[in-house]
Image (cartoon, rainbow, N blue to C red; front, side, top):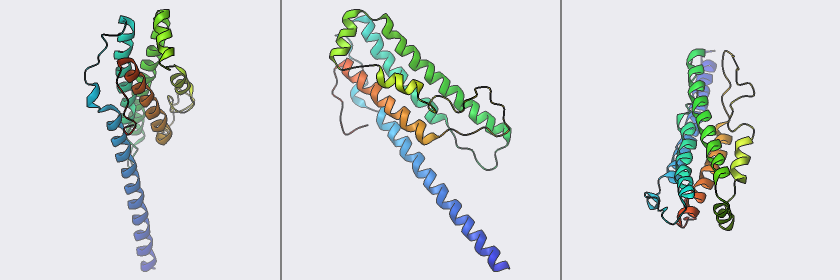
Length: 193
């Protein structure tokens, strides 16, 4: 009897260790990908002298939005087994707040396009820049909301699908970086994501 119990305990511990190791590797690779997206020394100083004032402001806001989209990914902390319902709720509330701020920043950035001059819009079209990838992520299900009900009051809130959220936000951050590089005249390095 005790041999079976010991074997079961060893098996459960082994499975838990492998799962922890796998999750840790995934989190570390996501952190490295975020760092590679935003830590680019070639764009420390935005050169916007060649742009109209509204396009220059748009280029600067593009960087701000890119950093805002990174915030929920950095603020998310996976729930631990010993979490109480209140601490889990606090974790979800912090993540939801960062996600709401990121969504609002992206929405306001997209709203700036309504105030651009016709010449600026034609210039963006000539550069091949569009709002399509940003609109699609803004309304894509499961990216900017953790659950269907914003007033959800459950004992244990449902965790977001972080692989899906990371994939979509990272792709959007890359598109914002491409947008920023096109506006400022930098060449995008194809080997850095």
